[in-house]
Length: 69
Image (tube, rainbow, N blue to C red; front, side, top):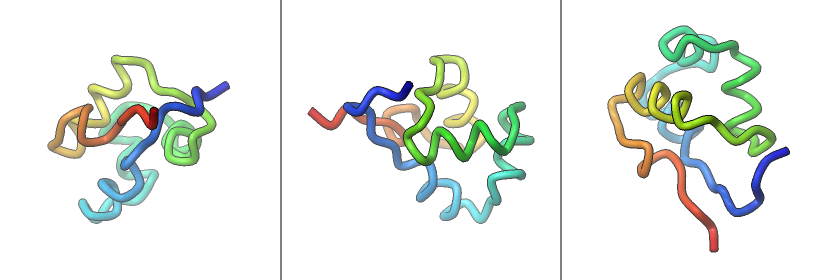
């Protein structure tokens, strides 16, 4: 279950990069469903996944994820 305090800019960063969920999933080495659940706040990514997503998007973890409180 996701932590309600975690916010994400993943979808905005992905779309700004011109990537589909499938394309980002391929770059990060995960399934499209994983990308979807992270974008929708259903799943909190591990540190490794967060770093992989940031690397795939050419950004930092802090630019993709933030605490809401």
